[in-house]
Length: 547
Image (cartoon, rainbow, N blue to C red; front, side, top):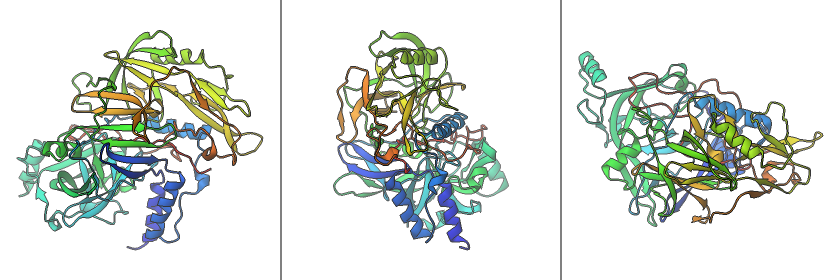
C-alpha cells in the first residue's frame, strides 16, 4: 500500500492512548488480564515493537505531547474526557463462563486505545475460516460486533477486511432469523433487491458517525483457559461493515468494533445463549498500585456485599445502575440521601449532584487535616497541599449505603496532584477529593471510587457485588477501620511519579488533547444495537507514566 509507513505512523498516533492487557491464565479465576496505563514502560516497549514491525523508523508518542501524570493539565484532560462521554451512557455487560468454560481471545488481549475518539480498549481478534485478524474496539455500551467487510466506504487505514464468501464457516443471517430485529429495513431491502440478508445500521450522534451493512454468522476464535489451552470456534453474529461514516473514517475503530452489551445480538449474549459460556457475569479488580484484572465468568464469592441492579423507568438501559440510600465518612452515622448512580469503571472520576455532592464533600473536608490548596485551574472544589518531606496522607474512608443495606466502601477517594517547585522536577505537591459536581442527568461512580475493590457485574442475577481485594494474590482483604494512611513522598529519586512510593493510581486516562469528536448515544430508532461506548468494560488503572 502506498504511504504504508506514514499511514501506520498516523494510525499509531491516532491510537496513542495505549492500554496493555497481559493475559493471565488462571483456571480458578476465569479469564485474567493485567491492565497497564498506556504510557507505562511495558506499553511503550510493546508499542515500539509493533511500530518497528509495521513501519521501521516510526516512533512512539513524543513525551512532550503527554501531560505529566498528576499535573493539573492531566486532571483537566481527564475531566474533559469524562464530560464528553456523558453525552451517552453505556453498560458494562459481558459474556462469562463457568468452571468448565472460561475463554480468552485466541491471540490474547493486548489492547490499544485512542484519545481522539474516546475508545479505550482494542483487542486483536480472529474471525472466520481461515481466520482473519482484526484490531477491534471493545465497546461496553453497544451490542453489535462489526468489522470492515466488502468495503464500499471504509477508513483509509484499513488494511484487512472480512469476506463472508472466503470463510467456509460463514452463514447468512436472513430477515426471518430471530436475531434480525429489522422488519422495516428488511422489507425495504427485499423490495429493492433479491437479497434476503438482514441489514444493519448503527448510527451515532457524533458527526454523523455510523456503520452499516449486513449481518452474518461466523466463528470467533477463542482459547479455553485451562492447562491445555484448547482452541474453540465460538459461533457469533457480526456485521459485515460495508459503509462507515464520520469518525470511523478518521481512525476511530478502523478495524471494527465489538459491542459487549446486553442485546441478543452481542457477542456475550450469543456465547451465553449458545452454551459456549456458562455464567453470565464478570468481575474487575482494581489494585492500589495501578494494576488491575478483569475476569469473565466470575460471579464473586458467597460473602461479597451486593446490591440490585435496576433499569430506570421503561428504558432499555444497559447501564449498571444502583441505588444509594445513605452516605457516611469515617465511622460517622450514615446520613440518609437517596440517589441513583451508574457504576462506570470507564469514568475517571466520580460525579455527583446535590444534595449528595455537598453532603459528601463537606463531610470529607471537615475531616482532612492538611491545609487547603488553591491550584490555578483546578477542577475539584476541595484540594489540599502536602509539605516537603511529608511521608503519608490520612484520608477518611467514604461509605455508600446501597439499596438492601450493603455498604460500598471507598478507601481512597482522592486524586494526587503533581507539579514542579522552583523549576525542579515534578513531585507530589498535593491532592484533591476526586468528586466533581455533576452537571449532567446521571450521577456516576467512577474508577477512582473503585480502587482497592473487586467489583462483580452479575448479569444473570442482576446484582452488583464487591469486596476489598488483593488482585495479585486473588484473595479478599479484611475490612479495616478508616481513615486510611497512604504512604506519600515528595522526595522522589528522579522527580518522576514512576518512583513515588504511592503512585497516583486513581487517574486512569489522560487524553492528550481535547476531544472534539465524541461518539454519542445512538440517535435514532433505526439503531437497535445501542450507543457507541466511549469506555471499555475494562478499567484503565494508571500505572507510572513516563516522565
